[in-house]
Structure formats: C-alpha cells, structure tokens
Length: 469
Image (spheres, rainbow, N blue to C red):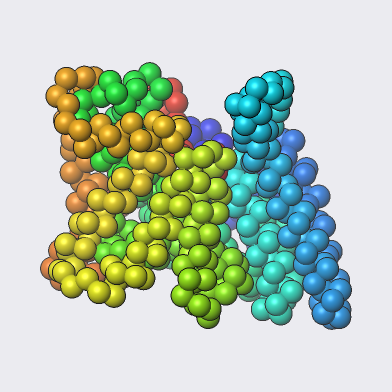
C-alpha cells in the first residue's frame, strides 16, 4: 500500500487520522500499532508474523541484556544480530546466491537445476537495520530498553517509516513514544509536508520515470539508443530517484509529525555536494549515519592506519551497495562510491584547489554516472550504456520529450540546485519545511494536491523505486 496510491489516500489515511484524533492517551498508541500492522499485513500478510516473532525475540533478549554480565550481554547481542541478519540474508539474498552459484557451476560444465524463489518482503532492510540498532545500543549501554513489548513493537512497525525509512534509533524517539500529544501546528506542518512531497512524488518523479523506464528498460538495449536519448535518460533518472525517494521519505516524516513524532531529516539538497563524502552526508542521511556508527566505526573508523581507513571506507560502501539490492550491479555501484570516497581523502578534498561550483558540477557528473550503474539491470548493460554516453551516435531510438516532461525537468533541477544561488542556504531552506502555513499557500497547495490526486487516480500504475529495498 503505497502512500501515493488511491487506497491509501482515500481510505487508510483519512480513516486512520480521524480515529487517531478522536482518541486520547494510550488508546491512541494502540490505534497507531493496530493501523501499522494492518498497513504492513496488507502488502506482506505472511512476513508480518515472521517480523513479529523476530521482534519479540529481540525485545526479551535485550531485556535480559540489561544488568547482565558483559559476556552474557555479548552473547545476547550476537543472537539478536545473527537472527536479524539471517532473516535479511534469506529473504533478500537467497535467490541471488543460488542463481550465482548455478551460473558459476554451469560455466565449468556442471549443470544443476538450482531454483529458489523467495519473495522479498517490502521494507525488510529498514526493519532489520532498526532492530539491529536497538540491540547494539542496549549492549553498548547507549539507551534503555523499551518499557514494554507494546512500545517496542510500536517503534518497529510504525507505518510511516516502514517501507522506506528514515532509519530511526530507538533512543532518539523513546521519549516521543511514551508521551506524544500533537498540537494543531504539528498537524498543519505535517500535513503540508505530506502534500508537498506527494506532489513531488507524483507530479515529478513519476513523470521522469516515463523517460527513464524507456531509456533503461529491457525493451531497448543501450546499443539501440542515440547518445542524446541516453543522456536524457540519465538526467531523468537522476531527478527521478531524488524526487521519488526524498518525496516518499518526507511524506513519512510529515505523517509522523501529524501524530506528534518528529523524525530526523533524511535528505538535505544532495545534488549541491562538492564531493562524494558530502553527498553521502546529504543523501539518505539515516543510512549513511547507520553505516558510520554501526559498521565503519566498529571496523576502526579513522583511528587506524591510512590503508586500513581506506579499506574500511571501501568495504562499508561495498556492503551499502549490496544492501540496496541482490544484484552484481548494486555491488559494483557500492564499490564505485567507495572508490570516490577514498579519492576524496587522497586528493579531491585535500589537494585540489578549484572553485566550489566547479567541484559541485564535477561531483554531480560522476554521481550521475553512478546512477547509470544503479539503474541498469546488469553490469554488462551498465557498461554498454556508459559507452553510448561517450561514443556519439545520432541514429537510434529517441524518446519524445513532451512540454510536460521538459517543464518538470526544469522545475525539479532548479529546486534541487537552488542553494547554490547567492543568499541561499540549504539549512535555511530545509527549515522552511517546518514553517507555518498561510491562507494563500493553503489554496495553492489544495489546488496542486487536487491535480496530483486526479493524476494519481487516472494512471493505472503507481511506482516507488525503493519499494523493493
């Protein structure tokens, strides 16, 4: 059940918030948990029981962890981490491992009919990462365990963040879980955030998807594309993935705010970054933070030799690529990002002396090339696509750019890069999201929202890229 689907917009969303605001105190929390379980079970009726049992194991293991001896605490923490990673590996990577093994055996003349079809539960990566975060923080003594199983389940299954984050640490939201009483300002601020990001998702991301899906789709091989169309596909996908993911993530933040929860920001104008290091501080912030705190630092972080530091950076983003999907092109994309993070440390951020906007332009160029690897279905397709970008070819398949698509591209590109303008600041622009809502703005948003909903109802398919992650 996507946030932008008619079922969610016309039934789940209004019914839930009407019930939520008619209740007070603990009944509100029960309504949130019950609605969250319905929301998740709607898309994953079988996996919800697995996730529920796994969460129970985490909760009681972490309860035992508090006040126990260090060795026993370590064993319990290991149990939690292993059972969560096992669940992630099985559901997300079992098909990939079996398929890769079958191809490897076939390449040496050993043919086996190895077939495994494990369905990927939606949002499993985000659920597992939050559950690991909870167990590790309890082990480190960084926070207290949930006062009851109910509040732990509320933390794990809260529906706004279930499908695409942001990844939230329990100790960052614990006080809000125990006491949240949304004000009228919380409701209006959250509702405005939701509507604005719904417009970004439907009117912009879905528009760019029309071009990107044709350019990168299996119906057209990269060899059959003209160079101009190949570049158009890259530009549209660059805008699509930002509007799609940041829009969906911000919709989650808006809905949580309507319930009185203040979730951490997940995007901060990533395309104005002057290096890959800065990009990953601005893009999917909750994932980058998770990787730093729960993977990079335990590996040694900056407190080690230079070669080990570079290995840590590269290994973390190799695993980040694998986290995004069970496919070799995601692993290659992770290695690609890891390479540029090392390059930042060695040269880009330390020795190169060029203008800031030049660095932004060069960084964005290589980020766009990275998106080619991310979007293609295989590594070989990615190399063919990259070749088409740099080997000029006029003849080939063209994708029509309608005035609607061109207008959306100009508006999205302008807003993505607006902090680069004089007297503009990304932090101030982000703070505007938390501002009040005036009468004129209400009218404009209402009209834009109606157009968005009308488009949503008219189209037959509503996609979300990170739905599969």
